[in-house]
Structure formats: structure tokens, C-alpha cells
Image (spheres, rainbow, N blue to C red):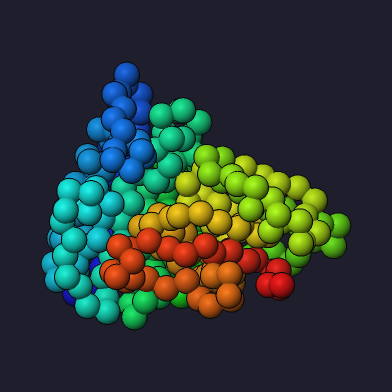
Length: 262
């Protein structure tokens, strides 16, 4: 039995509920060996997600951020899951709401299904398949909504593009890359929301020049590609998954809406 997108969404909402419970407390923050931040919410949310996935598809191998940090990296075949239980911990600590739960299903290197859920913003983005994606308003203590709006990238605006860039990882290289395009506005956003803003037609391009991990990006890539976007490396190749030899990190990449790579 294979997990459904509906179940992925339900699991993400459950993780979001626990994240918001911690968010409303005076939580402590640790610094990991790679200098990234860690809170109680990361581990609690990951436990909920792993339990939900194991119940829905017992044979599914899962590469999850906190498990990997603890040395648990299971062998997997061509189908596996990538999980970031709390993407945007800096945003979580800053209490700006721009953090997400990311769950993706990978088949033969490609994200074929995924959920990005921003519990503080009540925004749920779901890729049911490589060609069907939708968004909805969803409270973390509620059910998966029945009212859904399909996601589609927008035509590139004639008066200039909106680029979305990381709030926590902006670089001079990013600004140099953006200078090649007719960019009218640069919007900041945290976590995998940047993929989803392109998918929702709220932005047109998102360059990510700098290190990311597969669990950071897979769910967002599933959503934006199902909405008609593309995620390509700097040499215009598709961003692929299961890069065990690289330790599951990604090369630099660009998320394109209705924008032609130069």
C-alpha cells in the first residue's frame, strides 16, 4: 500500500499542531555541529511524521533530517521519502511564522508527491502527482480542508519579475545572478515557502546559490513542478534526489516559473 497525498497532508497537519504547541512556549534553542539551530519542536514533529509514514506505507524508507543527524541513514531503493520536520528553524526562533513542515516522496530521483505546510500561516501546499498541485487554508488543529485552489505558475509579468530570496541565506552571488533578469521586486521568504510562492503565482523565480540538503527542497520542488515550474541546476539539468555519495546535499539551483533560463 502506497501513501496518498491526502495522508501526507494529514501527517503534516499533525506535525504542525505539535510545532505550534512548542512555538507558543518559552522553548530553548541548541546549535548543531553544522551551526544550524535545533529546538524541541524539530524532534517532536519528526517523530509524528515517521510514525505516520510507517503506518501508511510500512515498507517506505525515510531520510529525515534529525534522524540523519543522529547517524540513522537507511538504505533505500528508487522510492523513498525525504522529511524536514521543521524547515526554517531560524524563522521559528525569530517567531516570524515563515517555517514549514516538508514531506516528499521520491521515485527514480524525482519528487512525485509532496506537502509543504506552514502551520503559523495556515498555508498548506500539496503536490498530489507530478502534474496536480493545490493550496488551501489549513489550521494545524483541523482536518485536511476540502476547499482547495489549484496551483499554477503565472505568466511572466511584462513590467518585470518578482524574485524570491532567502531571508536567512542571501548572498552577493544571488544578487549578481538576479541582475541578468528584468527583476522589478525582490521578496523575502523563509524555508520552503519560496518554492510555493512561485507555484502560487506570487513570484516568478527563486535562485538558491549555497548549500541545501535534499530534505530542505524535495517537497517544495514537488509542489512547484506540479504547478508548471522547473527546478534546474546552474547547468540547466534537473535537480535530482538520492545523492547518497554527496551526503544528500544539493548543488546550486534555480526555481523558474514562466522564465527562460539564460
